[in-house]
Length: 545
Image (cartoon, rainbow, N blue to C red):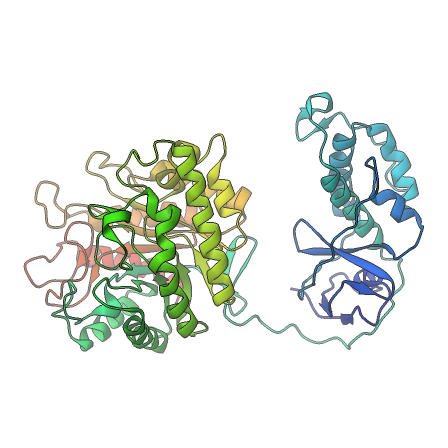
């Protein structure tokens, strides 16, 4: 844990880098305030990389050694762009870790310039004498002669990293205003660090349930029109007994409007929060469930699903106004865990016919998520955002992992906080221990950990055969127990959510008779309710005692 040792207002301190280093203990935290466009003659830059690092470029009009190091290109030196600095945390950089980072930075520079012999000269000029005689032959495993030159912009960023590391020497004196040490205050709400969820500063994992229609229980025309308000309480109480911490529900109903949705969602969120639970609110459904934002069906739908034109242009007609209204009214609610963009977005029919080029469609999907998530983040900066997709392969098909690699492009968006997978016990692959999307579930969990640096959850999962006697469901609990063990223990999932949950003793039209778990009533009880309940509860108690 870091302890706050000083607070720096760079408008009053000529050297932010000096404050960063300071003469402090083994761990430091520096909170930056002020707008670092120009402070006491210094220009400030945001360095791309872990921790959102900032570095001073050079004194304005100055001619020191660092100014020469920052530009190794040809032609006139570009004018850099300064950005505003948020409050950020900087761990102290020293010892072997410093050496490792320096070597990586110089490898990138040498690869870009094709002049590894200059590294020693740069080290000396930068005042870093402890690394000498650096011999560079490869950059990320590729011979230098096979690499194209990096752009001047990339070279500049790399050299700024070098100056930052130089400035992080413990010997640099402290300049500027300071505050007395104080104990670190836990972050309030949800956050993500090192690819893991945190709630109020403590690690957060969960089991949960999908209650798609929950906000709309009893509403005329919906599939749960015969449900009563007390059924919401029963559902939540049974889910809480199972230690389900997150409830997923859909925001819209096609037979209503945004203002009604706000009222329904607010009631639902209040009930969920009252029990110490949280909601993942999915803002649309690409399928024809009825829990979707109404749109021009003639232009933007094939039967029961959105077509390619919807994700190219149609969503701007009704979806954008809907989410602006709903999120604007509900942002900051203590019962919110995350916003989900759209349930199982995918081109329909599939394979697509409009337009025929799947690469074009993949790019349109990416632009859709880029635009929508940026808007959601602007509307509600403090709530997490996810896709609610089945998998990247389901969305982008052959362009998910190869070629353009849209899986990485998508989840490297800073406005997407975690990844989702939907996987069910499949009739054709009945014995697969984590469902029909097992290959994607494993592959994308690995990408989430190593590349995206973000959590991943199994947003929907369920056995099969609840109402269909050909397969039966006597062992649904055994299958779910095995899936939970693999997802949490082997593949590093942060959450798993059962699809279709009806904890009432009568049929209220909720859940899924095939893949859900039903306590009873209405002719659709699943015989493995108890075993499934126990499997989820066992894991839920680990996360929420």
